[in-house]
Image (cartoon, rainbow, N blue to C red; front, side, top):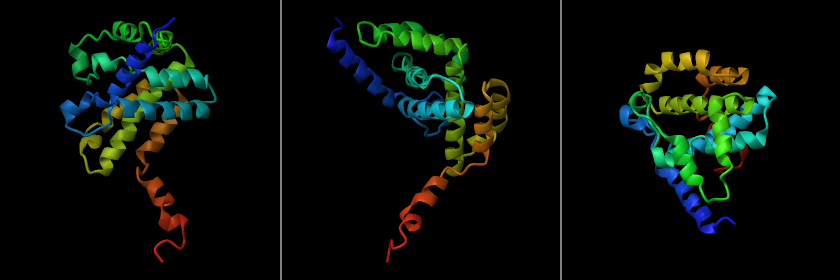
Length: 197
């Protein structure tokens, strides 16, 4: 029988993802989403991609998306610069993190994600990449120069790193999207004709 204390410890550890800054914050001085915030949007994005692609087991996709960066509670999130020099031991960290909990089977889910041999793993990796493009659009909205500087690099990601047609379509649409359009079309001035009268 699994000790419930280990499950509770794991839940606290997962909560600590909200305190893990993304690696690019250090090098680029941008206020970006935490690991936990990134993970949440990746999950929804992966589900949207799966439905547009017409493929994938949604339960497995959600598990992969929720766990794709969970070991970063122990390893931290490394930037594209740090990854040149740092050897991460995420498999060991994940094993130790899940040991003695009810969720040890998630090691298999993360392993499958890292292998990128299934459509589910490819969809989640596409979502992981596309979340960066969404965040860059949000930064652009705030007047940040980083999106312009990274435009060529992100185009390379679109052309060479995205696996699915749905992801490439999303990438194309994101480039001309307006991060605040949803606010402008669903606020009280539009939805409630008598507002302010």
